[in-house]
Image (tube, rainbow, N blue to C red; front, side, top):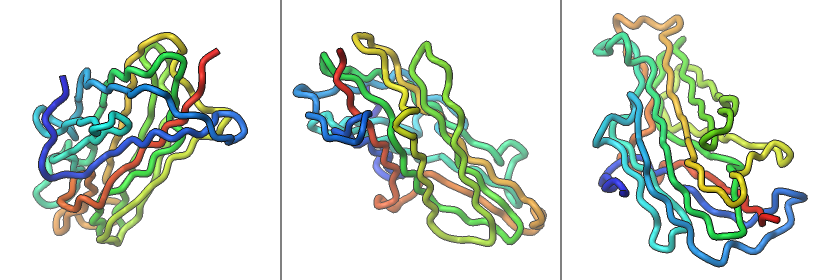
Length: 213
């Protein structure tokens, strides 16, 4: 059952693209709609009731909204606040004869990092029953007080497709970390977030389609 979409937060949109896994040639998109159900949403960055997934009306995209995805260090922070994570476990029902893989992901958020502080965003993607892929990380250095953006890309040869003819849950793990570094945590606060009141700040997951034998 889909969780109710929250009104204000960062949007995470998965766009289904008809690109080929081999040579970049265009492939026909699946003739039928996909259906995405939420199995579980867990993590310190997405406590119960603070994250939701909603499928678009035509079922060709999904939006994840967060309201508490914030990592921080310094004044007013708890010792565990420097790291936050969220794992989405999704059931993706793909039309017969097709399978898909994550080709790239564009992450966006907001960061306030004091001079000397650092922030890291990282993510991994894997299908149930398969080894977790290596994390792709992006580092940010203070001072900064602005929107941030990071892009994960996967080489064509490294694309990991869901097994043809099987329904396996798809997992997305994301993480934010903030370190005080040489800044003074007794006098300042540094943070990174993937929740925002600015609906234009979003993360786009691009899926590559492949026809099954």
